[in-house]
View 1 (cartoon, rainbow, N blue to C red):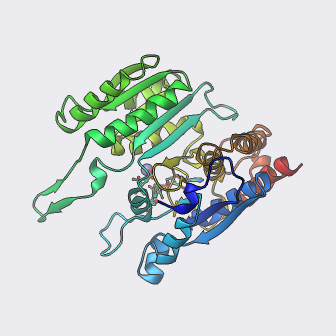
View 2 (cartoon, helix red, strand yellow):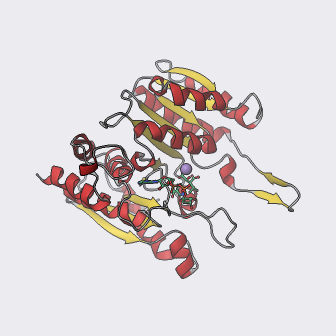
View 3 (cartoon, rainbow, N blue to C red):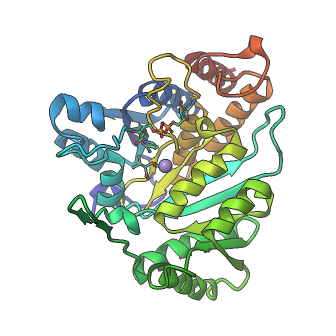
Length: 349
Ligand code: NAD
Ligand code: IPM
Ligand code: MN
């Protein structure tokens, strides 16, 4: 056990955040989120560490030892994005997957809320609870060029613990959990996920449970997103559905997430390193800012600061300022850095 974590609850102590920008636009959006965190919670301490594909190319290792040391001494992690090439790169494993697995961050919370943006549908407020450790992400595959096989692992233990996270969160929300699966085809794996989730549902009689096949879910999410509250899914379905859901929140540039489990909470935007726009100063920092708010609130239990940060982001958007990925008045299109300055202006002013 990390001795820092054994401190008595309620004792004031510095909150140390390990900051990992990662690759691509991670270098642009994370500094904005750190500035905003400093403004809202001046007692936070930040320690910077490296990880990702650029680090691998430079040093031959995706997560260096000193990064693990920095994480070990931290109360939370703010992570940008990494590049994970589709070609096999010998020796490279996507750093974010290694972090989720080694830190046993078994729950990936991916909310979508309608933002105050012109032309965007209002009334969406859903939370995807993605199992984060197993499914096809055990990444055990083999093949000989003629055929290939991937292992999909679903266990009672991991399904019970992710289902409990989903039902406990639903209890504090609109009390509806949608269990997503494909048990009509994947009888063993999705069948087990479904059965265990429905068993756990019985521990929460005040929460309504429904089940939906993932293909139907993808359709319903596109036409009637307001009907969903908490969406409980195995790993890969959650990955796919969270990109889809992000559209209702203004797109990938606006979608935050928080990974929770045994190690320090790790907040990260849902988006990737966005090589198509990296280095141009135009990436939307809202996903990173809202991830930082999740880290502060749900992760570190400092809900007041998290609320202030969210409201500052919302105020800048409501005033019409936006990065180019969002619709809006031409004259109010701003850079990543300028959006960040406006958020800090809200917090400091
Ligand atoms: P992506 O999320 O990086 O980008 C998809 C599209 O959304 C691009 O057009 C991009 O410009 C846009 N976009 C993403 N974030 C944005 C932002 N903040 N502001 C404005 N526009 C934004 O996904 P991709 O292009 O499929 O993948 C690129 C790389 O990122 C790949 O190597 C992939 O493996 C990796 N990836 C990493 C993560 C992660 O670190 N968690 C997540 C997804 C993809
Ligand atoms: C995400 C990403 C990652 C995932 C990739 C980059 C490994 O798509 O965080 O959504 O598949 O989980
Ligand atoms: Mn993804």
